[in-house]
Image (cartoon, rainbow, N blue to C red):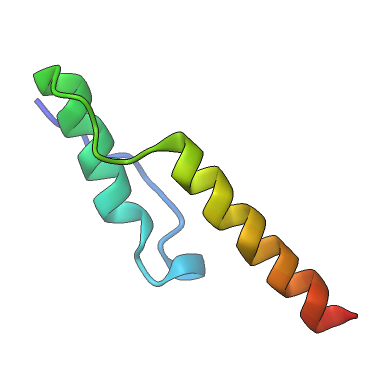
Length: 56
């Protein structure tokens, strides 16, 4: 059974909702998630670099 987890939808335009759903479905079903921590970390690194570049 999936449970609702409160998240901060405002900061990312609702982007957390599908990520949480994917994660919880993966845990409940035992099927590996299609979301990769490695890819997520890389995309965050790129975003942080872009923010630093814009600020400097």
